[in-house]
Image (tube, rainbow over all chains, first blue to last red; front, side, top):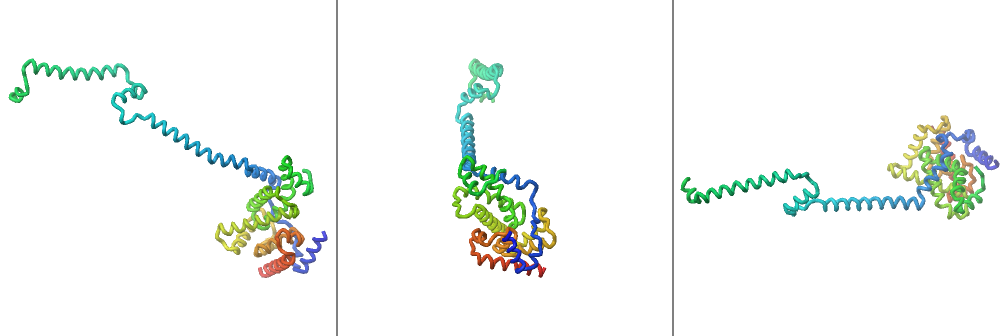
Length: 144
Length: 182
């Protein structure tokens, strides 16, 4: 109180204008602002604690490393499953059939092989005919 | 909430089991004084809120090493003062604006602040205070509004009592001059 009186005395000596003004606080704060400050600070302290920061840093490091590891693993395995271009036709067929890349039933296989045999059979008939009738390349040229 | 003196609060803070509770009590005890001190420096509530939070976080980090050479409140007040000045300097650097313009910006903030309700003469006084150099503004606020003793101010601002008296005298003269001129 004495201190306050001294300040007021000084103010009157310094400037009457300030002494005349009511010393009121015209600033205000949002509702319940001060009630919430201790909680806000508590939360910030927790988020600044060494354990929390260690976890945060761990997540920052562990997640990217884990992600890189998983992606690398998937890429390597995906590439390993791809049929190599150097495989022989038989290997490709085996892969197609064994790994069920396409559905091939017995009928398709029978039809495919039958067409090949018929084609082979046709050319054998022509050869037999040419031999039986003693037709060689010279005869054919002469006829033409 | 229970009320303890600073010595008791500090003893409780040093005990790990009661540290959080003690700090809550310290925050509750001093938050308003610190807030108003900061608010008068940075003007806007949002900025004052940021600075107050930074002050209290720094205090939490430093309190274990607090030597009790100063009073707890003086120590907290010093952190709040430094944080306010740091904030204003950052603001200046961030927007590449000179000191005069920062004060001008603070003055505009005051006029449009929904959390300021002063009448015309009070607004004029606040604007006059904002024309003062930072250090003088601090001295004026601490003396005029917080009614602090020069000795306490000297401890917080690390300035001699004589220099503070002179600074306050100049501040008052400038404010008077500003209001008469305006």
